[in-house]
Image (cartoon, rainbow over all chains, first blue to last red; front, side, top):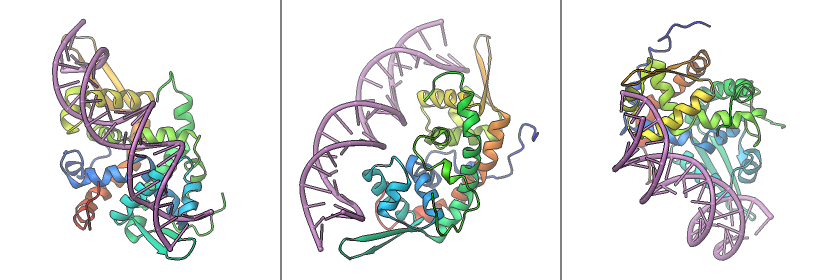
Length: 128
Length: 128
DNA sequence: CAGCATCCGGAAAGATACTG
DNA sequence: CAGTATCTTTCCGGATGCTG
């Protein structure tokens, strides 16, 4: 796949991402946060309850799960449905906007997942 | 991992992203790091020198720029070309792999940039 | 017991000053 | 110009508590 030196342009969005004080930065930091991506991926597969998310997104702490879900809900990516039963049952699902986002997110994740082994494998020294 | 309804699925990568101890997580954290994304976007437009990157990716500190570039170079996304002149000149560019990655990254950034205003604008309360 | 909120210690991010 | 060293701040994870 040879694509010269500036093959990927034509998006014109870069004026809105690289500047410091733009809304894109805020949303970007939410979406690309460590756990934000994984929660979105998990929810893109199916709706999840709190405990399910906690188990599916391996390694996430309860604090970060709560915080991530609150942020994503606040941004309108995730819908929280709480049922005042005992014990409480809270379901999380993607909104329309969340699905629109993950449509762009999943291909990226797929590529990373496909190439992660070779990338990490050929590591010339310890990093990260 | 049994997943019942999978609306956006068909990717099959999720088995390799959500588990804790997988290489995908490492690469993912590098790529989706706060500054990693922005540096990749900047380099997708054209090669940059150190000082150019510092000015283009607004708000990045020198420490984080150095650290981010080192990580991305180590992962094989970025090529560092140093000329031992005085004053020194160091150019950074995307590798083939880096271009393959940004091909998936740019559409996501474009979407975020397009919708950031409405997302942040409709904020119902203080967050972030 | 499920689903959170809060407090604390360590780790990482971030800004600044300095060096070749 | 292109970084490193140092210091400060913010973030993350774990433990604990609370509520129905």
